[in-house]
Length: 379
Image 1 (cartoon, rainbow, N blue to C red):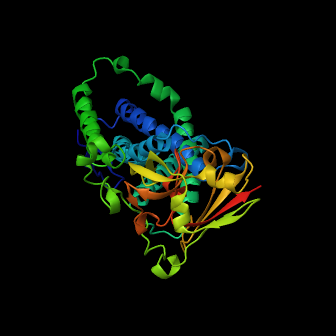
Image 2 (image 1 turned 120 degrees about the vertical axis):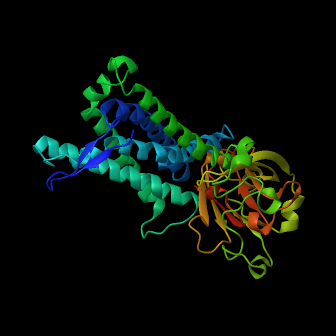
């Protein structure tokens, strides 16, 4: 299975080894392609739920309640699984990177350029995404916008590569396409090793969103159940600049056709509703929790807001990218969308948004605004 590198007369190295062939590359490539496809589609869902185009703001679905938990969990899981698959794919083809002459024709030059873009974009996309799960951003560019744009470059490069290599892929797609293949046993061992690596990294990280496997969540940055009130926290009150002084005299201000203000005591005296809803973060972790609060639509009705109105939520948070968020009518009018005041039967911990936070079904965690101080009706 291992390649031998030979150098003859100072010329470029020549590789002698098995499994650096089209059949092995095809077997690994289709696994990698499936992971990239799922990661791309779920990434689009995540992006447009976070930043919907104007025409979709009021029609994005708030159900199923676990929708974003599933799609974002799949997004992160397939992104992590793609790492050993991509490395294995590169291993099967790397001797060809040293082919001589490096460029044989204009068509060959374009093919090599497309492969360079493909490899670079996939490596950058996957590894920046991995660092995002740890909330580490050692680069000067904005992650979300760059990640979204780069995803289109990566998927376009994949599709172009498939189109160029379609005859080779078709010739080696089926197991029986290479009769009397002496490398078949070693190839099966190699693929089994790659799948074991994929299974290992998945098992060690997927528990952050698939809680039945939380006991195996050894490598993910979040573990379900860890944190105040048994729920993880990404951004604490201290990090958001929420102090006792800022909370003193807190009021909820609802700005609409009939504006009004509520103290904390007045808010908690209103009719409450309880719901079990997940908090699902873009970094991949998620967990169900028992929330209690005032349905947002009740607060909007009291302000005589139109039923198709969008809502702007303003937090006391300072310096956060999501201190101000907007919510379409499909979410604002859902009976499960709450301005929550308690978690697990107890008042919200400061790190979970005391005195009040938004919790809505099928919505990214970054938009579940904490430390809410103002609700504005947009017309």
